[in-house]
Amino acid sequence: MCECDEGYSGDGFSYCVIEDDECEIYPGICGENAECIDRLIDYDCECHDGFAANADDVGCSDIDECARDHPCADGTVCVNTVGGFSCEIAPPCEQTCEAGYKCSDGECVDINECAEGIDECRDFETCRNVRGKHICDFNADLCEGLDLPFADWKGVS
Image (cartoon, rainbow, N blue to C red; front, side, top):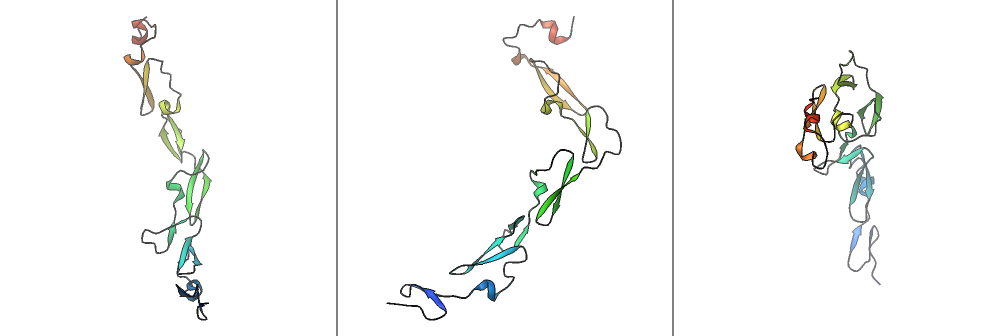
């Protein structure tokens, strides 16, 4: 029966590898944002939550959760932190927003009535958002099958 020498492990026949724990021998080998996992041959680095492996596979960097979709509720802003994020109450707008605008993250921004489904366009009109309002454009393709007099869409009585 074949056996590996002391300090080695394996089947003793086809391979024997040194039992060194690289994680113990080289503390910090994975950097401060990762954990070293000793393997039979070599080691792996696993990034902590909120961190991702760098492109060169050396160390881990903070993930900016706020740059992606984040779970913060309406009326709050996402603030990236090391290894995570927090949701903070959005600052109020310094001025009152004009009609067609709403306060978002302390600034007045255009309300897209079309995307929010709050436009007043009729079945044969296509909504088009513009700054501070929306426009209902006549769309002949949408009129097929509707029994509407020509004057209805032209606004003529």
